[in-house]
Image (tube, rainbow, N blue to C red; front, side):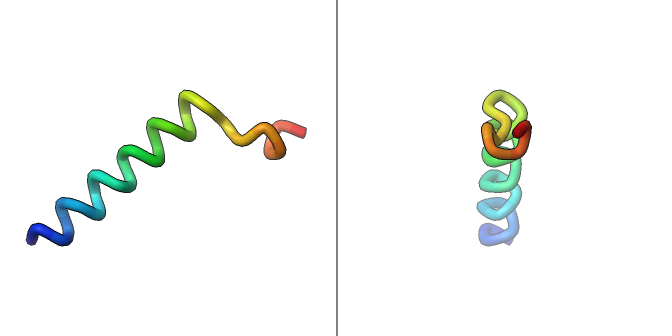
Length: 28
């Protein structure tokens, strides 16, 4: 349960980071 929560937080964090800062090479 705790592990799942951590994974979700990590995914959400990465998702927000990706949305706020899209990969510069991806836009190329």
